[in-house]
Length: 299
Image 1 (cartoon, helix red, strand yellow):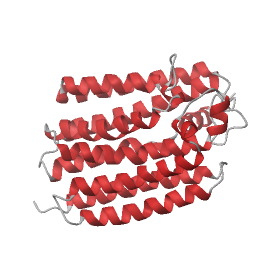
Image 2 (cartoon, rainbow, N blue to C red):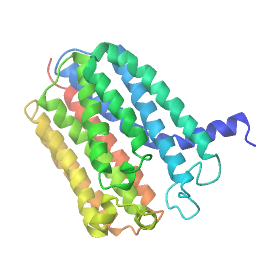
Image 3 (tube, rainbow, N blue to C red):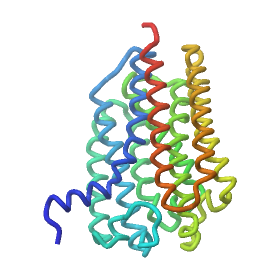
């Protein structure tokens, strides 16, 4: 039996808090763009969207934990951090209920966002919740396919950034879309490293992730492209606004090469978990650079 405090710690670990920044950065960039370029920022829907996005990611993480653990995966041979069901800490049913509660919270917060953003936001919200569950459940889970990175770019990048600009300023333009894609690429790179680390276990379980289909060497190239592409795309989007965007391209591309070289030299083992953390930090640094440039624009 677990007491209240230890059970709360279990739920916190199952939510994978170290990954939740992937939901926050595109929203922050979208809000900064709305404020600095479009000169409008409706705070109430942005805050509600932030809560909804975090809840959706927690629901995705818990649903993934319950689904994979319920199928007998995520056991002692797992190279990544321990999971609630796979480690025998909670039942699959309990974790699935947690995912349902997180989904309900996301829907309630999302209702506020829809009140500001209308039908386009409703469509994005419904699609996000459906994909949160389809990632791990259903006859063809997204997590077992080579399409995972694409869905991450769409939802953790483009939809989050563009949706934030829409609810914050009631506008939509090509720059917001480009920035969204740029923020989605390092989030996809996190998944790429995760699937690279788990390639042997995933293949044994019948999965066909992109890392498995490409092979180890090509996966490293994909990872480098994702990070370098994020920096270059951000710079391309921002260059019409400021020549300082060139610095984002140069520094970001250099950091991408360093990270790709590190991935190439780290064996498939638990040591790759540090590479996951470094990739999340890359996205944080990229978002910080973009936000700093936007807020530094003359008004």
